[in-house]
Amino acid sequence: MHILARAAGGPSDRTTHPTLAVYWQGGAPPSVTPLRGDTRTEVVVVGGGMAGLSCADALAQRGVAVVLLEQEFCGAGASGRSSGFITPDSELELFDLLSNLGEARGLQLWDFACGGVERIRRTIERLGLGCDFQVQDSMFVARSARDYRKVIEPEHRSHSRHGRDSTLYGPEDLRSVLAAHGYHGGVRSGGTFGIDSYAYCRGLRDALERGGVRIHEGTAVLRITPEGVETSHGTVSANAVAVLSDRWLGALGLAPDAVYHVQTFLAVSRPLREEDLRAMFPDGRLMVWDSELVYKYFRAIGGGRLLVGASDLRRTYARQQTPFSPRVWRVMERYLARHFPSIAIPLEYFWPGQLGVSKDFLPVVGRASVSPRAWFAGAGAGLPWAAALGEYLADKITRGRDELDELLSPERSFPVGSRLQRVLGKPAAFALSHAAAKYLRR
Image 1 (tube, rainbow, N blue to C red):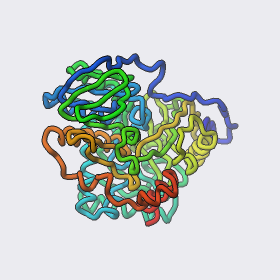
Image 2: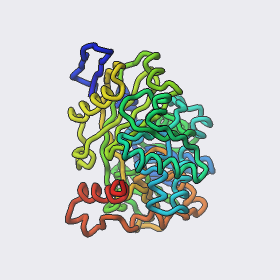
Image 3: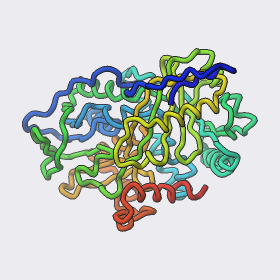
Image 4: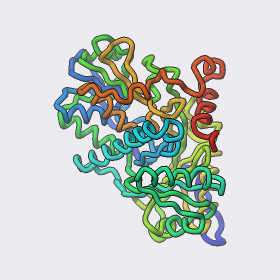
């Protein structure tokens, strides 16, 4: 998906060779210090993404001694490759939660995700993290008149009925805040923001290390033991274990049937003219995603660039990560050309990402069978959900928190059960389960 140089009546200035690299990460990967030998601590945290770092941070603030283990480097996985949308909406909006779970539980999980938004905000303020923090309202837009009636209006009513911030825009009003062609209205909510998620993870990692958390990157955990964890170069004995490795939970035998992954792709444009960004977002910059089943999304980031995300159904549930998809690249180009036909948006960077999901899009939380002191959490699709999960496990270890254990158990009922999943295979089972959990009601 590349360049859209479509100034009015002008020819297309098409670049055919994007830079295949994560824009946030740039340059060489950071140096790492693997674990060597055996050690002991109060809590060992497995996973150096948003969830693991948030858990370690919450524990360290309570004076708990922590060792954090990461198989690559902190921010190497989904957290450091993400779009940086910090909003409680992820794969499920508020209306989805209320419809699927009922009012009480739906609101409970929505507030849980909102707590993740606030944890990230507070951490940025407390530590002064330089991570391209940009206050941006969220805008969920309809790609059809039917989606406006069936998805956008119910989402607005759900927010309004429960006292949540929400503004509804019809087709005639939307262009006053988002000057794009082809949308049929949208719903806007405040209290959200965008970040450079990789810079956030690296900044939090460094702050934790300065505060006394022992961090060993380049250290893959091989198994959980009754005493702690075992790696290829040593062991960590601990009073408690918190595994927050998202889609890699199954590699440790944790929730293997309940967790899989979905794949998306991200692109970042060359720097745009400030007047073009103001024309796109006349009432302030927004984080935008649409109502398609495999949705597109975009927002302005630092340096005057535009970030865009998209996928297609064939790639979303692929078993292996696809480094580059010319088809998705072209989808991105056409999408921007359609909605912003008078603005040149030449895309420069392109990369894939895989994030852990369950079969109903809700996270999983459980206890490892090998030890009553080992807990795991994952499949928190969205950075705020991951941050909230990290804090939840820290609370569980230190305070016995458990109000979401039953609701988020990996043993809960899913639209497609384990027996049928073994027949269909994971990609088909998760695709069908997701359709049942969210899309069939449309």
